Length: 145
Image (cartoon, rainbow, N blue to C red):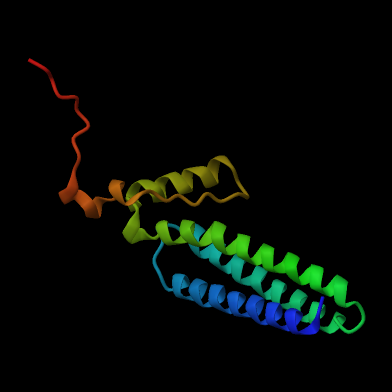
């Protein structure tokens, strides 16, 4: 891989990691029904720190093996992108203001009791949030005369 392309990809990956990290820090200031959301955010921040360290090592290895370093950097970019796309929407929609928190908190605690060592993060569509009570839909079938 040519050095210019490698440097551009390196800057892109570092920018995406920084963006993801800032977004997670913002979500850390949010409120979640249980500790599950906070635990997941902290775990993701640790993972990002590990990814940064891996990318720094890849950058140092470029002079010895430009092709291998380029392939590894592409792989790290893919991992960061997948991590970002998988977890951010779930964390955003699991905030207390976006879920029926009484039910979600009870279910998350129940899941913790039933399956110790694993945490369950629940979220729901906006249509099922208490906040949207003015937009109630009728699920009853209409009767024909």
